[in-house]
Image 1 (cartoon, helix red, strand yellow):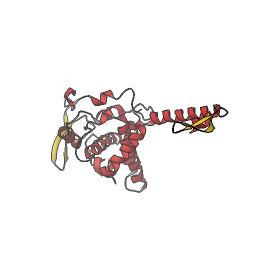
Image 2: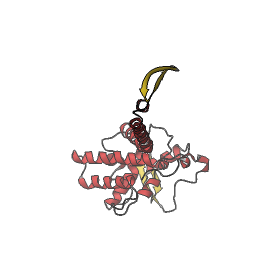
Image 3: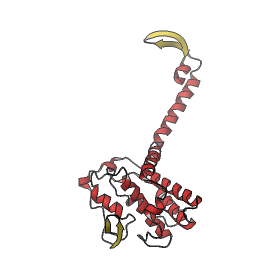
Image 4: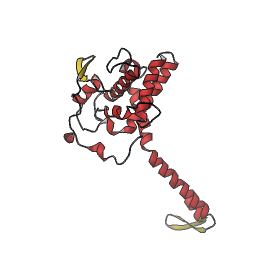
Amino acid sequence: RARTGSMDETLTPNTMRKELVDWSKGVRKEKDLLGEREVPASAYFGVQTLRAVENYNITGILLRNFPEFIIALAQVKKACAMANHKLGHMPKDKAEAICHACDELIDPESTELGANSGAEMRKNFMVDMIQGGAGTSTNMNANEVIANRALEHLGKEKGQYEFCHPNDDVNKGQSTNDAYPTAAKIALILMHDSLVEAIKKLSESLFAKGREFRSIVKMGRTQLQDAVPMTLGQEFHA
């Protein structure tokens, strides 16, 4: 569900990247505060992601290289949609559509979700990890991908934001300054699961040896000199 294999692919230089945006399937028009732009018709990302791809073409190390971060962003957006619905700020059908889209991002291989577009959605996280705006483009990339998939669940077309808007709905009650660092912390937890598990196993092994050697007495050592006696078990428990 998260990462398999090494992280070597995350470091592919920008000069080796092929064209990121696929225009071969037609276009749709979207607009933001800077004006109207054409966006690939089949894309789950929107106009703000497209601008970020153009403006922050820096390293070629993209969001989609970090599935743990995508999972974390989706978890934050799902939690917010559930909270907004519970508080009466979002209708049930819209909240459920957003949550469904988030679930697909969290587990692209789930068979419990029906038609699962999670893998394709993850490919649409195209913003460079090094960017301006303290993570705003990352946040909006997630908002647009989730909104456009939610629109499909609502029986609408991508880009029909009057029915589910990336900022007004998916990002409702949030700021990049809280959504981004929260997701980053969750992602770090997800990425360190294997390390934490290894540390737990090491701790269990040391304590097991401590119990095994509890009857073996040895000299303690302090500053390279003999000290009071102790058991080998105590040494392993230290």
